[in-house]
Structures are given as structure tokens and as C-alpha cells.
Image (cartoon, rainbow, N blue to C red):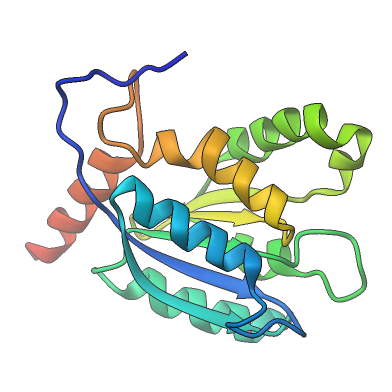
Length: 180
């Protein structure tokens, strides 16, 4: 069921994509590529893309710079949200949040349960807001990135989606901060 009025105007956002992996390269990063293809197909702009090893401080450095950049509205990360030894995306990124979007992880896991059953409990997908930037941290699988974008994120980044979306809040925050 769509909650998007047909006559509303779409507002493109600038989205940064971060892949957290000790082994992926641009050539082998299928999850990051799926996110880029989907965001561009939706009409948004890829602001930047980066691949970083699963290191808390390297992740925080990249994401902190993006949060401080007034041209970046959204950050989507893929990888490092499981329970393997080096999986540390939530630990790296959550301390940067001003507010947590509890419903993001809850909804993502609810939808994922229909696809992967109880294995969804091993997903630590999280979302939050930091300095007027919305951040979504997805698992590293290509399927999880498809699910996250298609079933949750796309609507929340569509200015036409009703009853609410993040777009007007993101743009209002950036405009308020650029005025002084």
C-alpha cells in the first residue's frame, strides 16, 4: 500500500554510502553497489562512497566527517552489524547519534523475519539522527541492503511519502544551521 500522493513533488537528497568490510573492494562491494543503484534510481544523488575496515575509529572518523558536511543529508552503511568478532558498526556509530530511530531496527528485523526467519535476531541494524543527518546501518548482505532500501528507507527518504518522512526535517535543519 503506497502512502505517496501522485501530485507531490520529489526532493532529491545527497546520500553517502559506507561499506564496512575487511575484504571488499569497489569491484566486489555488491551491497554498496545495490544501495547506490537504488538511491540513484529513486532520484537521489550519491554524495560519496567509502569502504573502511571494521575498525570503530576509522568508521567514526568517516561518518563524523560526513555528519559535519552540510551537503550530505543521509548516510547508509552496510556491514559490521552482526555478531562476528570484528562486527562493530553499532558500537562505532551509535555514540554519534543525537537521537536513535528505534523503529528502524525493529521494522527492518520484522520484515527480514519473513525472508530469513529467526536468523533476523542476529541483525543489529540501527538508525539515528546526528546534526540533522539521518543514518541507517544495514547488514552487509546484498539481500539485507535490498530489503532495507526497498521496504523501509526508500519511503522515509521520499518527500512525497505520507503521513511522514525525514526529508523536510533534514532540509530544515540544514537551512537553519547555514543561517547562523
